[in-house]
Length: 97
Image (tube, rainbow, N blue to C red; front, side):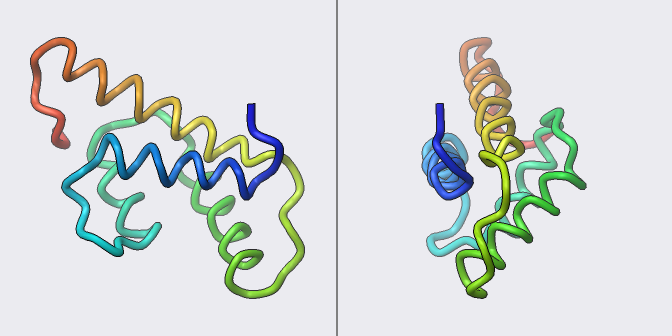
């Protein structure tokens, strides 16, 4: 369980780095989301992008921390693990379809 949106995005960052290793060093969140969309992960991408915009405004733009606990980031982290680890366990490629 994460305490706030900052921690949710830290978890998402670690999950992306671990399960999507072909992203270039210094990848942006936008790069990562575009790559992840190719995995057909079932999240609400519009909500995820909106959540990310709020988080980036907080982290880089000095805005107040967004309300909530980063549910979209947590959901995406969970889906990444399920989708990519599931593919690995079935002996399939982990790349986008």
